[in-house]
Amino acid sequence: MKTDILTKSKNVLYKFDKITSNNGKDRILALIWIFILEFTSTVLEYEYLDTSEQYIFHMEDGLTKEIFIASLFVLFIWYSVYSIVFMYRKQFITLALYGSVCIYLLITHDITFNLLIHNLNPGNLFENGFGFYLLIQLFLKLIITYLVIKMLISIKKQKQKE
Image (cartoon, rainbow, N blue to C red; front, side, top):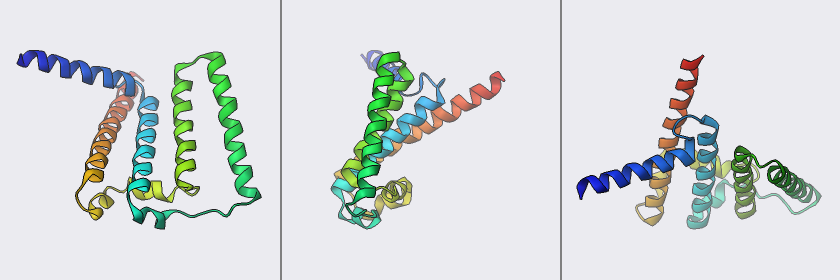
């Protein structure tokens, strides 16, 4: 029974490594997942904490904002079509990164990425007390730390090959 649980947990970790860093071989894949998880973490902070509003620079509605949003949308559509036509796996993952940036900008309206930079600082994690938000943030930060370690292992392996 105990070995069965251990085998299942190793299998889950192997599949997680395969998806997120190709078992420590692909540093770009790990970096993309780090960004996607960090965008998710920042969106959660924006939704659950009232203090997140002080880090966002709100851009006035106008021609500049419309051109910026339209150019992002056009680039997203072109990149989607390109990815579908050529069917590259890495391009789909990069497309997910690009999509997460667009979703981040749509939800938070944080064009300067100040909230994202604030969320990168691990010292700000405990300033809002203990609760469900803190548990989710700690879980996401733990996964991000694991992916950073996998990315560094991948870089080390690649330097050893050279």
